Amino acid sequence: MIDSLNGEVLTIGLDHAVIECSGVGYRFLATPQTLGGLVRGETRRVMTSMVVKDDGVTLYGFGDNESREMFHKLQTVTGLGPKLAIAALSVFEPGELSTHIANGDAKKVQTIPGVGKKMAERMILELKDKVEAMLPAQSPNGVGAGTAAKPATTYASEQVVEALVGLGFPERTAQSVVDQLTTDQPDLDASALLRQALTHLGKK
Image (tube, rainbow, N blue to C red; front, side, top):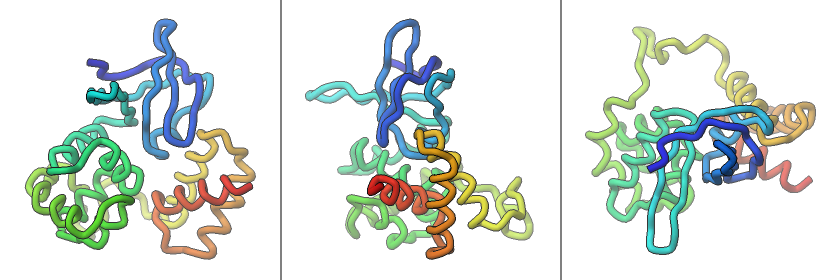
């Protein structure tokens, strides 16, 4: 079992990266958020989960233990496999997804690609009691503990620009695209903003 990788980042793709450890390059699938924290040529550590199936072995990478734990919890849902689990984490941070599940918000859960009404309801039913420990801490005024008073749009923009630069896009280009998207759609959260930015940049 490969629990983590720590080494030089060789390549970064839109859905995967390769990290070299002791002369061996390990390819793993990951979310845009995790990939955005990697920089080619620099040493990085990622937490991993190995999925073994009849058709092969696939390695998944995560920037933190919380994301990996949610990846494992998601796969306890009947009929939900690793591909759908990684799709869920590409749309929501673990705390966000936990909140939607705990609140029984099926419409939010259905925004995950590949998740229909029945699967969303099943996720809520089977995970509601399992995600309590992953819910964001709340301060007395209702804001997550440790969260700065920075506007959500500004914070999301900074996160997405950093992620795009990590994926190899020029900072000026990334900033321009993100600024335009946040102007046109100010209510986008970081995950949705990153997806739309990648779609837009892919057309250039």
